[in-house]
Image (cartoon, rainbow, N blue to C red; front, side, top):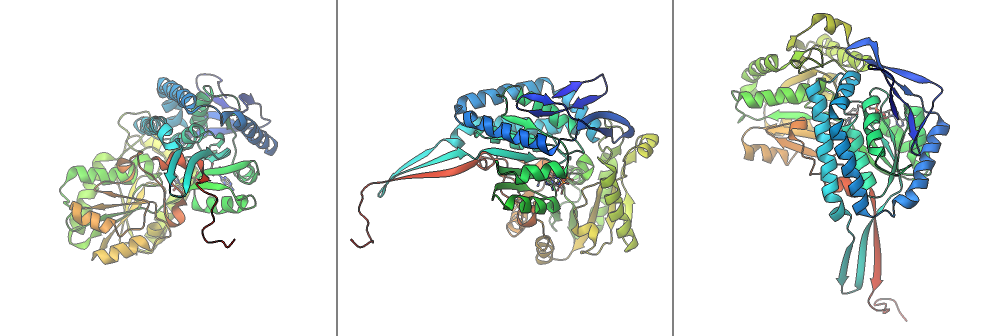
Length: 496
Ligand code: NAD
């Protein structure tokens, strides 16, 4: 699927039924650190090729669903080992096409492998059929594969958010057509290629492109499940496209995750301060569950802001993703950079104070790439766009609040509900957490630092439908099939 053209340039082709498929046109993927440098090329998959991929997956499903679970797990374990062996190569490619620093790219592989291992360890018991004898007879509950899964992933964590779907879908006996994002298609395709090399032809297929291909994947009658991670606006199109054929869906969408600092939070705790800074600016803020609005109790607000700025200036070093000193790289693409810049400028026009954070390690590089200096935004109104929208970039507003009731209301009035965090004395924090509308709430930590792949992850309200990760993240790729065997043929309430 991926061909090393030379030392520098990667060429990716669609991968259908176990083979690379040549495309008529290719799109260049630039390096966000230096947009004149082409990292590689990926194809624009045609509608006909997308249909071919779906048909290949449907064909392979007939035999793949019969493959014993032990064999599926064995293949997945071999794939995991191959990814581990190729880790450095994958990480370099990811860093170049995405812009995330090397340590962060390694972190993405780390989370991906942790999840794939968990899925392998848990698949057998999660998918084991259950037999219950009871007063009415016997019931068998089996976890049957759904069929062809269309897996559509975003650009921010292209490998983690592809493997989060591939591993459980295949282990549960489904086949898959993966479409990575055109903003970061190369490393995800490389990893899919490695996994595919361990599985029969047609079990994993990879297509490329944007909405055109996405529409085919989400409307084709042969696709029975959609596993989508991306924006809430895109999800609305997907729901419409899928409505004609009523598909099963897992939707992991946008968020406007709040971090709430209670009166009992110790502003002198430097490790906690470092944690919140990282929870705001890891991957240049381009994470669904990054803390995107920070509320601080008014009694500690001034000191909090002062300590926050100190901690941010210590941790944030903006530079070349390949420089081990760098903690924050460029934004992935120009569209996102301009969007975030627009939100910051809008806040400034509304009277907010914008404070630049961190140190720029290489000014020339900073000017040449899609870099944005991280910013702290103070003095916003609680309903300003920079507070209520998902910024998905290196900027964060910090706002004071007066009492718990007010901050819980501000948290819950959002259309989103992905993750949130509450910081302070544990029992106070848990008590507030119980009142928040979110898929996950973390105590004294936030974002990826508080993620645990052993438990279900997903959003409430417009942040999504369904869950990934945990045992639920495996069973979400199954149909729960109940087989009832009655004990007698008597019909208790129906007249003779
Ligand atoms: P996006 O919605 O623009 O794109 C996501 C994917 O959908 C891409 O592969 C894209 O090509 C494809 N797509 C676009 N139009 C389509 C259509 N009409 N039909 C089918 N597919 C289509 O999102 P993005 O900009 O790549 O990612 C950023 C968003 O993803 C943010 O909102 C972020 O919060 C969200 N996200 C959520 C999670 C989560 O777990 N909840 C994780 C990461 C990112």
